[in-house]
Length: 463
Image (cartoon, rainbow, N blue to C red):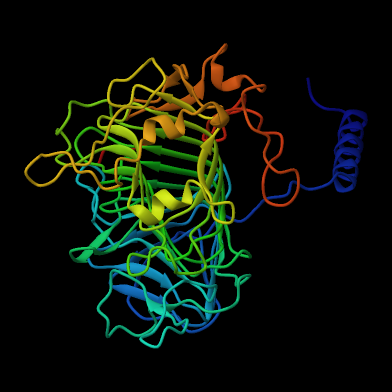
């Protein structure tokens, strides 16, 4: 049928009406496509405010020093390190590496996945002006040079008198396959903090498969919260030179092939008793997991804590389990003296020990476990009985299975307690301080209670 003039007119009016209505409706909000990212090689020091963007990948080609300004790293940014590289934030600079649970910042090896290993690059170093207990030849407080670099390297000094110094923010950050050995006992760790003050924020940080320690605190007052150290070649958390920060929600997991102590703790090796400030961290809600391996498999002693050189420490609500050689060694007269001190005490309270040196029941933690190069047991404390001290009635510690879900799993660990675990008994847990840094609601033993804060941002790649 041929269209009539009436049908043509009606069609025109309908089309006009649709067009008019469309003009009144909001147009779709079309976002521009993000610009493609670049791979940016970083080979020069940083001397002013700088931002590393998430769309790019940054490759550290050498030891990069942030000498001044603030280095801001956006959530989700990936930073890769070549062999012989590191990122060091000096005392006149800051870092703002603030990721999110959904978009953590990742520091990793520049090698391809599948060929990565501990020590591929140097790690992250933060240097501040908070007190340390290092003195010059005249006995006066002085700065020190951070380990891992030649003494001639500029920008490696740390320490001072500003207890609240701010090294910056490191939050929701993963550090993988790091660590660097310059000489024996002169090494970089996954995260190294020298003289950082209490304004520094270190929260939700994982250090995975590092060649030396996971985290080492050289003096200062910086606090640690929500920290996971998995499969380090040496120690989990190392403190010395007068570290007096606060720690809450910390996990250390060793593996059967490498790994020494979960805690290696010192005051000062040169003057263990008299060096001030004394290393006296306050520690709450920690889970320390050994490898449950056969003795000697890791090629070194593997135990939970080596407390030495006059360290103090107030430790509460710990789970200490599955360490091949033992739980804790109080090493030396100066350290033994801290166990009866009221000013700078050393104690562990309201905690659970289990299956350390295969001890799963009874009322003691076992005998000495440190050995000489010939394999003989070493008496380093004039027969101080650690097992009796840490299991005394006043400590409120228990020798009982914490019933963790999969704490020994290296690929998909789960450090949370099962329903009915003694770790969830609020009556046996200590009460964290109700003001300031600590979460006072953490009335459980170990790092994880009803909610697993490690989910969503941690990772456990084998290589």
